[in-house]
Each structure stands twice: as structure tokens, then as C-alpha cells.
Image (spheres, rainbow, N blue to C red):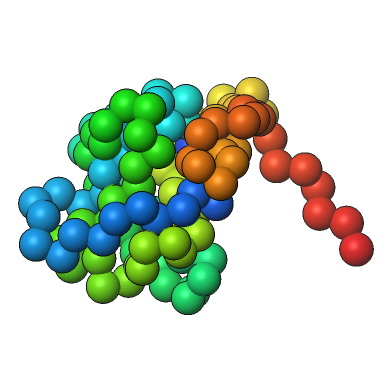
Length: 126
């Protein structure tokens, strides 16, 4: 049996561009792609913190070091420049490997520059 687990997350990045007529779905600064272990053309889930929209698309490379998060094509209708997004990717993990699995969780500052890397989500308390 396999379980679908969180593999990668870029937490609360700011949308820098929305390009309705650009080919490609979500351009992400290459530094962030590498930090999160997301490859070009990989399926990503995007959750818009500001408006509640959730959609699935794929990642393309954005200019390295630019902080770029460009939501493109029809997905551009689901975000506005300045919106905070969570970008996630998932993996199929064999049951025997579930306990050892550690996701790449990338946290950024207000310029979309990585400031922290974690490998677990803390337990939520009341």
C-alpha cells in the first residue's frame, strides 16, 4: 500500500505576477524550487490564503534569486499580485517508508527569500 504524503511546501509566498496569457502555470524562483525539492513540470497544489481559492497546476522555473511567484494562464484568475499563497507537492510513499518520510518545508520572508527550512509540521495545540 502507498500513502499520499506532503513532499514539499513553500509557505506563505507573495504573488508577484499574474499573467493570464502566459504559457505555463506557476513560475517559481529557482532558489525556492530547489529548496523545496520541486522540479520543473511537477504538479503543485496552490492554496490562496487571501481568497480561499485552491487549484492544481504545474511548476515552471522563475528567474533565480528574483523572488518570483507568477500565477499564469487560467490560474491567474485565482490570485492577485500581493496575495499570499501556499504551494505544495505530494508524493506516493510506500507504507514501510511512511515513518521515515520528511517533507521539505520552506518558509520565506516578505521578499519571497528563504529564511527557514523544516522537515515536520509541529503538533497543533489548543
